[in-house]
Length: 133
Image (tube, rainbow, N blue to C red; front, side):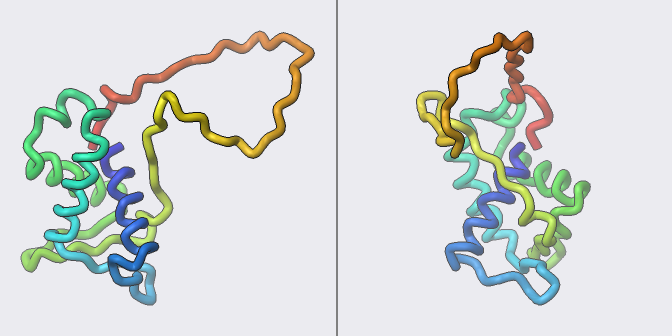
């Protein structure tokens, strides 16, 4: 979940022009300093939604875990000895957010009156204790 939040934040940085555009292969070249700053802002904004383990870790330790997970799933390469990270094109495909419980999201559908009863039950999942990084 944290890695996906970071992917979304990276994407927003590129879309707004705050970070340079990807190279001709779709890869983004950034420094660990840039990613650390971005990670700290993501943690500040969303950290209260994370599980106990993630909230209890130091930022440095948690960021290292996130780097590891992102490397494992093919989102980044690095950081290297010089402090450079290569963000791969696959990272642009992912972005997640937390919905505000009091905020209604428009669905783009017209509301219609249901004339039959549904036999399906709604299931609520709590992802907060699942793998955070």
